[in-house]
Amino acid sequence: MTSESAIRESLPTGAVGRVQSVRMKGAVAILVVDAAGLTRPDAERLETEIRANVLRVDGVDDVRIALTAEKRERHIIAIGSGKGGVGKSTLTANLAVALAASGIRTGVVDADIYGPSQPTLLGTQDEKVVASADKVLTPTSSAFGVKTLSMGQLIEPGRAIAWRGPMVGGALTQLMEADWGDTEVLLVDLPPGTGDVQLTMLQKFRPSGAVVVSTPQDLALIDATRALDLFGQAKVPVLGLVENMAGYMCPHCGELSDPFGHGGAEAAAQALGHPFLGRIPLSIEIRLASDAGQPPAAQDTPQGEAFRAIAARIASVIRTVQAEGG
Image (cartoon, rainbow, N blue to C red; front, side, top):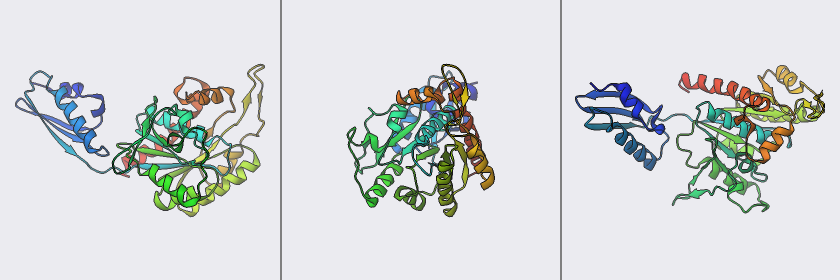
């Protein structure tokens, strides 16, 4: 008799985690497959691949597949900062890579319309974005399993974007309403500050949570507090604070110094009642890897582990919400 395990072992990679049940009725294999989040062509393609694979199993003469489309909530997580230059985009890219590696289907919206950097960080600057007949964009996929969309992929390299607020809001809407397929978590790399993009995001695409990035210095923390206040006013849960550029180890002598201070973001998180997610060191290795489109989170290094540890804390929150049916 053909076993369920034999059928499951035959499934294509894209079906793993989607097949809800398998049973045999004589020589007929009957499968229930979750197609939530897939476009119709993708669902049909998956059904064809499953049928072809299962028919190769000994004892299976026919395959019947029932596609279900129970709607799943997509978690939108805003990554913000009160000021520029604190490493928000680098954190976003590395969190996305680490979340994807943990099995969470992850996408990145580069909402920093005026200064997009995700194509460089994720190595997708040469990937062309296509649109359907009804002008819905299709995100590109990085080598790290992360879907991404950025204005940096839609304009000529080096071209300035001189848009007023309504145009910026329209651009954000087009990126957010793209065909994200089965993406479970969408990280939104916000521009610094509390301007038009943030307001459009909060009004039209309410995030499930927010992460705020700061360096340890007092000025950055003052600005980070403004970002926290904005999320608080909008009643968006703050998942926590990240302290970036915390500690520098000299590559020549090995001496550790703190040019921007140390522990400020952790102290601020404690004072304001928010979780502290961790700190990222000031490192030439992070800069070099980021410029090369090779996120440190994908590398077995101390810098990569720092990003992965923060991502693990966020993933834990996401999985808890999913388990509770959110």
